[in-house]
Image 1 (spheres, one colour):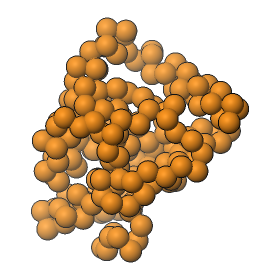
Image 2 (cartoon, rainbow, N blue to C red):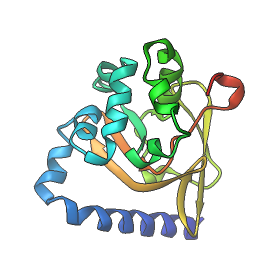
Image 3 (cartoon, rainbow, N blue to C red):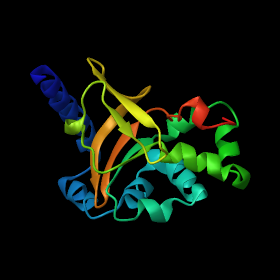
Length: 175
């Protein structure tokens, strides 16, 4: 258990060190006054997520009091979906499926990286569980690697991931 805690701290330090060159200390402190949507809107690598949240009608929800933990896929994560998938999900007739997929990326409460343990599961707003894996390569949520952790907002925390995670196949149809 002690080794796991040391690994988590080391991972958080590496992630924060990677994040520091792109922000100043005043910018990091400003994050605490911005909600999750405001933070994502100001982050170029999350512009596709912001567009999807808007198309799903979830902006007001994610601007709410929370707290929320959001596992935020990068633009590259969305681009890696099969051709036409994102475009199809953004269509009005597929809004319910888009909401289901996006809410699978949200856990109620504020879960920091130091709260995670290998093998733990967490219930998502969508209703299914996600699984945390911690190993020598870092932290994963299902099959998505966390590439930036513990970006705090006024209403929760964001962990940036490198893949779009999908609810179990029996929970969704059409993707």
